[in-house]
Image (tube, rainbow, N blue to C red; front, side):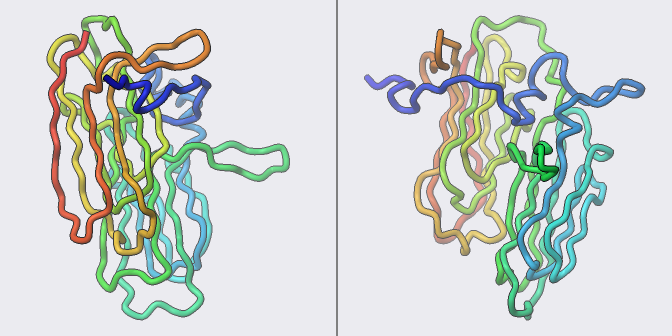
Length: 273
């Protein structure tokens, strides 16, 4: 019988800039005034790069407008700290219609991500929480993509678990946005891998459930990557030199690109201890 290590490999553990890793750790989150925001939030921003844009793009975080990209615009950076909330956050990217985009347009990428400033003064992106792109030739009608993610503090728990639980995302974009919900709490929306983060704070002793909500993205026809996109939820532990999966997969989800994608949901029940 193949183990999780055989199927998904082991992973050397190292500090990750990925915001969910920090957000799900006890003691982290968006603090109320007058406490300052945690360091990971200060490094989070909305980054738009590429272009010139083939159509307009509007970006909202928790209902607040954080960026408006005009037809023909290029790279820009936007602060989003004032719009960020504790718990579930919702990022909405609205691609506007343009029947006759001008020549010379190129792909424009919208990324909500952590970043760092290098010694030469240039800023580089670390891990993205949500990322999507407007192709050089947009659709003739408007389209909206919605990403949900948790930004701490983690849900309160009354019992301490004996094990720790992790999610691994792996694979190319296949034209879907997949939201991971654990016991009803939206944890993360993803379109592709690689991602790896802990979700122990969302799990309770005994009965649990994980749900995968898959929604077609705006520009699935423009995807040329081939391969399988997969998500795994399982227990794991730190070995002396590397991370190891433990036991069986508690939640598994995978899909490939489809010609006529449709929304669907898959739910899996499991027990934790």
